[in-house]
Length: 126
Image: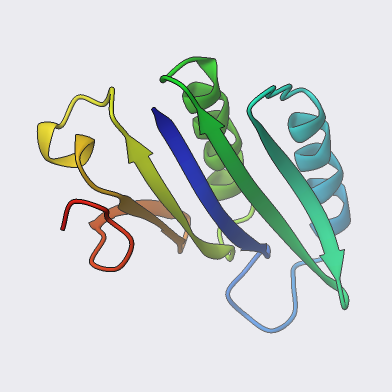
């Protein structure tokens, strides 16, 4: 199983005011998202009260192309929108790390990077 749920608040910088290219970069992000066709999930860019969010919900029977497609979207967000921040809870039973196969991990998006943290809240085995 490959399961992922989360959100990312989209921003060019960590400052209160963006650099002026946010709309163009969000347009490109929406193009990337439109290119993703998950039968077992949904990837959306939403505008809520003037703020853009990327919402991720995926529940696949096994790790397939969805994982690499999600990575491609995150690479774009980190490179072009480094002020973005959010969390993705991931359960990857087919992953390389044996410890991550039995519990959720949290992909923390902030400062143009994705850090992997162990989950202490949702993991069914903990």
